[in-house]
Image (cartoon, rainbow, N blue to C red; front, side, top):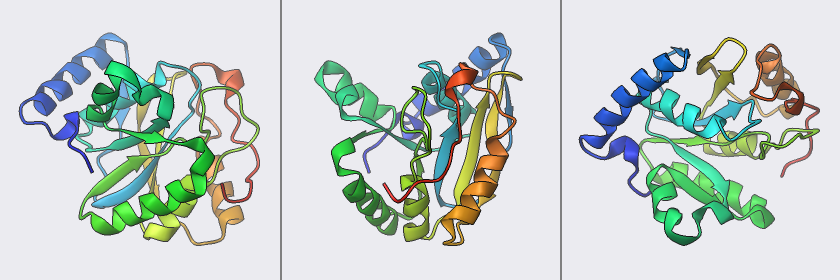
Length: 200
């Protein structure tokens, strides 16, 4: 995996302190601690606005997480491409979702330490179901799922708990969705955990 801002010497320290100050000025608090696991999939929800991205990065910096995140390929074109990759971005071709799951599983097998953010909604727009790629990545790589959140109602972000997928996706998704039931997104009407759907 490529080097990111979260592991760039000196810069990552400055990033953490800038994030601490910015979140305090915005009235935000960070809950939870960095997972003890060296490898995990992190799901971030709700994803309802462009504000989610900078706030998520700041929360991760405060928690001293070294993370990668997945974004649509169009974000990585032009002069901003290298910047997005430095911020931890991995370009996603949404027409090849199945390949992406397997490629991410293989990346976990090659790495001694890896954390990847996968938004279950897949988009900040209103959705009627959660995508399940994150679940199959964690299951295939045999790593836990960190349930991270941004609660704009309380202005609190962080990691609530670690979840070990059992292989029974329907039962597991009920538990995961219940965790996010009381959390408010920036645009609440656009957040809907929705029913589970077949593998992406």
